[in-house]
Image 1: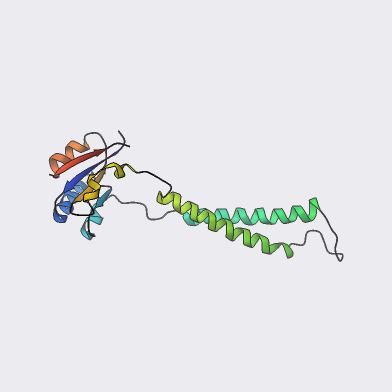
Image 2: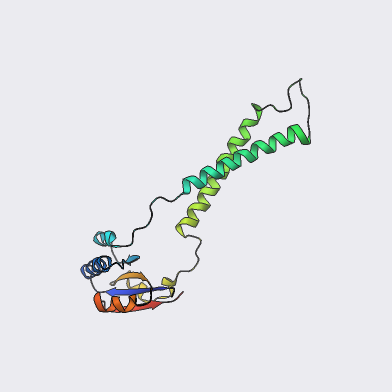
Length: 171
């Protein structure tokens, strides 16, 4: 089964207590939707990896960009259109360093922004939470715990967490 379900609570204290019970039982919530910040609930949620490899993506893209920029200049000056000017060698690497530097920075910046957007999930145009009408109440007066649907977890949550309601979402 894919999708999510939401457990609805009337107060922030009930939300934190339910999140603590869910974590202790081995079913931590994915997220909490609240009308104001509730710092006590954050340690009770699912841990996410904080080390996104955006730096490695940028390093690889910058290296490939520099290699491509250097190869482009070398090919045009040595193979494609060799011109001897002032008795200088065709492969003059000192002159070729500026373009690889600039292509490295440009490709690393573009790959960094696109990689960051992909790793944050910003290219996702629709999320199942947008379909639930109860999420509108989360910005006003309700407190919601978001769980990934895993079979019998919905019935477990309704029995052990004692929410006001359990809302099922399908993707």
